Length: 306
Image 1 (cartoon, one colour):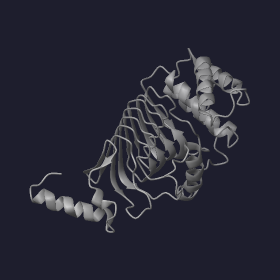
Image 2 (spheres, helix red, strand yellow):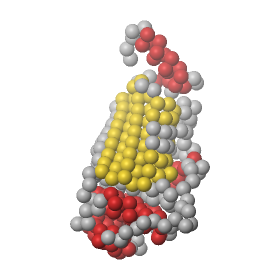
Image 3 (tube, rainbow, N blue to C red):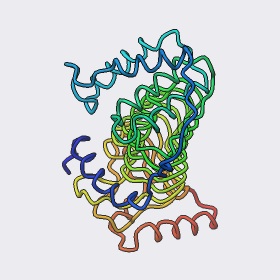
Image 4 (cartoon, rainbow, N blue to C red):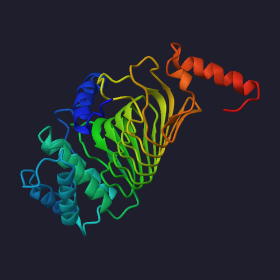
């Protein structure tokens, strides 16, 4: 089986996401809505930094990993010493809602907001993105305890090292997470790609889970949905370490997990360990996972062990 490149699978899944998340619509602001934006010294410095960031710099597109990190580092450096509080975060978001409308760059805004939170003086923050255009790259390199509310977004909690709670649907979550915990109260596509450590919990459904995962733990409480891209399997592809726990998945799909290492648990039963399928007969069993569960339940009642 050919392993699909991350960029290739991301393009495919983004097209899928537009259909799956399409019925979720942003909350529109009333035309006569006037936000109370008080431009104190902190907000003034924040906006100066915001307007100074040029996305047409030689660093290139934010879709390139190196460019993303370079721009984030630049933003964090310019925000150093501001020590933003929750009121400053709220004021900046209100500024984006009212003044920027749909014209701001979704990646730039998300990275900027991430740096603003990480350089802030509080241990915890709320980021309420409801009622505005989509933001991406929120909670990038997060080192605080934050709660994000949104209707959808892309690339949340990348390289997270603390605690992120997301209330909304996300395309790309906890990519490269190094530690801490990410909890998603919604549906996700591309979960825990290259996860290094920590824990990721998705309370809704998910697609493409644990690609090239190195460590940590992923728990999908909902269903792992079938993937249209025939070259990209549902979960555990090229996985080398860590643990994936799945409540249920499509047993009739063409492909099944092919991890190199780590553990995969399905419906509470250990299915793969260190790249080896523990019960090979299931692969060719036309009744799929249901037969496995019935067999294991019979073994449990008989007092047997795997």
